[in-house]
Length: 159
Image 1 (cartoon, rainbow, N blue to C red):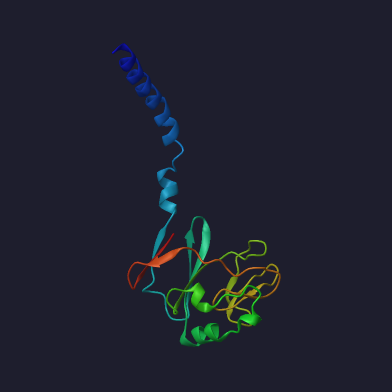
Image 2 (cartoon, helix red, strand yellow):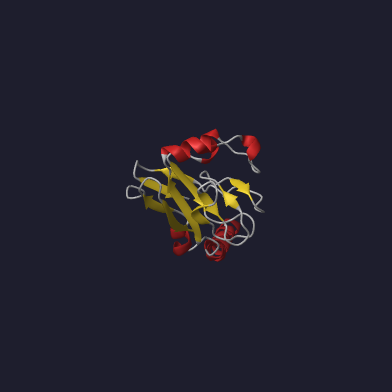
């Protein structure tokens, strides 16, 4: 009986010491709040690009026109440095969501710029199309697509 009682008190003591050490490794509330963001896309006009902040990074939300969608879908993969179809980059053809950081040196590209009316990096001249795919310049990869989902027809959750 004495061994069982001693073991039980020891287990409670170890748990009392270990709990604060383990719980301090969890992210705090402000970090968890930044892990996802919801966007109301009902006010974004066709052809407009809106920039939102997620995890301290700009995210471009583009409401694409039918002409832009057709151009993105008809682009031959052989013309791309980082080949991806438009369907691999979007969940709904009219909405494009990409992280707005140039994959060359981390600059923020300018929207509705360049020969493809997508984005152009002002620092080193990387050019992206309306699907966020690299078309020319020193950037090696397409603009990254974050994890996102459509909660409703008018709300998108990023993260």
